[in-house]
Image (cartoon, rainbow, N blue to C red; front, side, top):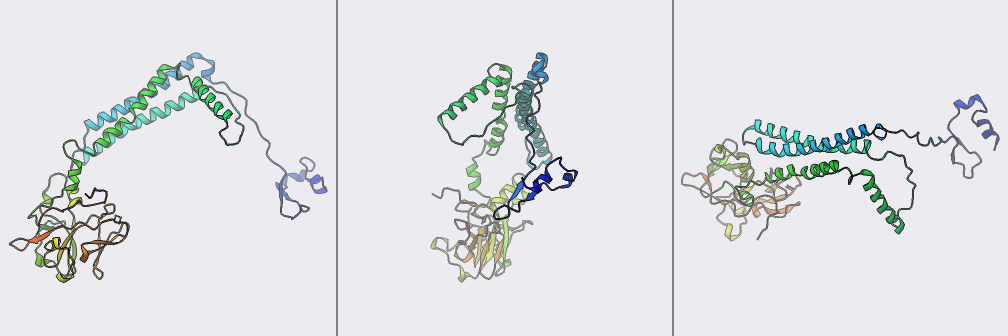
Length: 361
Ligand code: FES
């Protein structure tokens, strides 16, 4: 021990109190080693304390009652959520019904989750064995002995948790766990109404033969003469504004971008030659990547740009994808004019609008 270490020994000198916790070793080869000389001693485990449920069988029974009551409360919560889903349906155009529906389903699910969680914690803290153990570190490899020991541990856990012995707890836990996913089943089922074919809902829009193209949001029909060269704006089917139910859903499918090019700029395939009128073309506004509204039109390049992931569509070339992750062109709405000069649809879109998950046939 060198002179400096002797001076620094705890208790040898009152000046120790103000000494730093580490010292540089001037004689260490290389010269930068730092030695911790005052490591904190391992305090060990505190003395074992028995729980009240270890000492009194009455307290143990009370804890058991509490645990299975909580699991049954969870069961009640799950059932309540299902009943609330049916008793408080969401009525279109009625925000109050949405509030009630969310409130009661949320309360049921909260009770279900809290009952399960608190019950499991209470079970572990009051009834499962209470003893301190030391888990020695060992190499991470699946030796035969280790696997055998793992099986033993599982068997011990099975014994110690008393899941076979405490039938009320086991049954209530099983009932609560089985019931808990049920609200999710009915909630997801609600996404696909029984009385309609969800696939048909997505395949059809409000556009039909003769439907006039109307300004959004006023709903006034548009004459071909009103569409100036180079302009681009959003149109909707006439009559959409008068829908009592599902107006937003229909609008999300039917929104169309109307653009006027020079008639000679349009490169249409033979079957689409008469889908435009005097340079006016109409394309779905719903991006074929993941369905964002294609909202930007660059007049110089005549490209439509989707702001979500930057897909670009070449309007003169049937909105072919020229950049970005979209996999197919924007669907085109065939248009013409009626005898009064108003722009009308020749039919619905001839392909599904929106993202490219469709079977394309
Ligand atoms: S949604 Fe349009 S590019 Fe992704």
